[in-house]
Structures are given as C-alpha cells and as structure tokens.
Image (cartoon, rainbow, N blue to C red):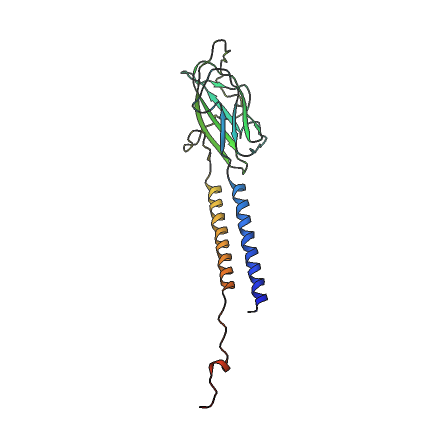
Length: 219
C-alpha cells in the first residue's frame, strides 16, 4: 500500500471516528428525561407565611400539551381527617417550571403530588411533604373537596410507586431501554472505527524480492 493511500484511509477512519463520537455526545443529553432542580416550598421545610404559589423547577423546558392542566398537574392536600385540596387554579408550564397558585389552610403537614411531561415526551411524577406553621395574622384558606383542575373525568394524581421525594420517575421503561441500546450501538461503531484506524496504520513488512532471497554468486 502506498503512503498516500494509507494516509487517505487513516484520514477517512479518523473522520468517521470523530463523527460518531460527536453524535453520541449530542444525542445522549437530548434523549434524557428532565430532573428536578428545586421545589418551592422545599421538601421537608417549615414555612410560616403563605407561599402564594408552588413551583417545581426542572433542568429543561417542560412539554405543554395544551390539555387544560391534565398532563402537567400539581395537587396539594392538607392535614386533618377530611381530605382537602389547596390551590386556586390549574398548574401552568413556565419554561422549565410548573407553577400553581397556592394558599394554605390549617397548620400541619402538607403533601404535594406532582405530574409533568418531560421535554422528551415522557410523563414523570412524584411527591413530597412540607410543614405549615402560620405566623400570626396569616389569612388561611378553607380548602376544597376536589382539586382545582378536577374537570370532566379527571382523577386525582397519584405518584408512581418508585418515586421517592422529588426525584422524577418515568411511567415507562421503554424510552430508557431505547437510550441504552442507542448508546451501546454508538459505542460499538466507535470501537470498530478505532480498530480500523489501528489496522490501517500498522506497517506491513516489505516483501523479500527474489534477488535478495537467492544467492546467485558463483562458489
């Protein structure tokens, strides 16, 4: 193989290697589900003033399906024997955050159950609690027997059994499996390209000519 041909093959293999590596680097973040960055009120916190709104913030824009708050929901229930819901309107998507107007009632532990649609289309859900210890002079809400967005046949939101705290859990493992196979396939292509580069760049031994291998001199 000539030097110029070897260089062309090396250049082609190196280009393929870099292209696959770049696709892998870009595709993996794009396929990832959203993750929760913060909540207001925070999980496990104790607040003394009306929060005015409850905010769940993620690391990427949420998907707004325009279905009147049925896909992206927040439900807040308070203490006491009677199950009362708090929140004066449906939750709304605001970029990477899900926001719901909120006024709390009697003091005690409040439970937040949330559901949202990740930027890749996967629904996520979870729950957490916080304490409400109203300071003197705080106006208290009465609560409602139904969530603010319980219109039509809507049911209450239930967190997935695997959800812990504010960590999001996908309702389906299908997307995750697809991501894993994509990564495995891309890594395989990268490895094959790297092996190709090594094989091409290996210097083959020069063949021995007949003149060099046979001694024709007279004794």
